[in-house]
Image (cartoon, rainbow, N blue to C red):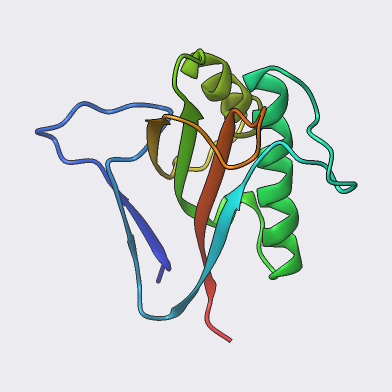
Length: 135
């Protein structure tokens, strides 16, 4: 039995980039990764562009997952917050660099535009929910 089912109702459009819904069985542990942004291990902002910051935020999400015993393939839901006025497509392209080559069904994803972030210069924040077999 699979822990995760990707659901794409026939009445909705399909996309190679996301699933419309994801069902996780009770036999799974969930890992909630809090919002990660383009800050590296030294606490420095990695660059001035959304693409650079998105890449780092995704790397930070992955680091959290690995520390919790999971990896990118266990993600069932992404949420990306992008600063108003930034080219959302750049963040999406960074996501596709990491996810695009995978053959797994894509997770559900939500992208939101926000007015600003607490730290000056931050252009995005990414959070994720992952599911792994229960221990």
